[in-house]
Image (cartoon, rainbow, N blue to C red; front, top):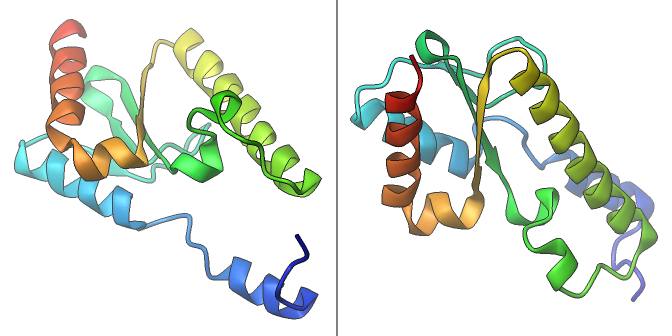
Length: 135
């Protein structure tokens, strides 16, 4: 399927996609605040995590379903090679970052967009469990 926008218009549309203060990031921020966790949002550190709980060395990522490939290999792939390369590259980068952070002693939690939006209790349960496990 051909793109419905001109290259200039597509560039403008894509430039409006935010990487910080997204709806799911703000919802996770509210969850962490409501449950009295002390956290830093968007810390300047390797891997660019969304949140860090420094005291327990826990990193939290809030991953968009499309951009980070939720059930990517179970679904029909995007028709355009550009999007397949983009999503697969994001997935490889996510794994590489998590591996390095874990090797440095961090615990890495990743939450999918649909879980944050529709099942925040599940997310908080996982955070509480990880928080209790960490010495």
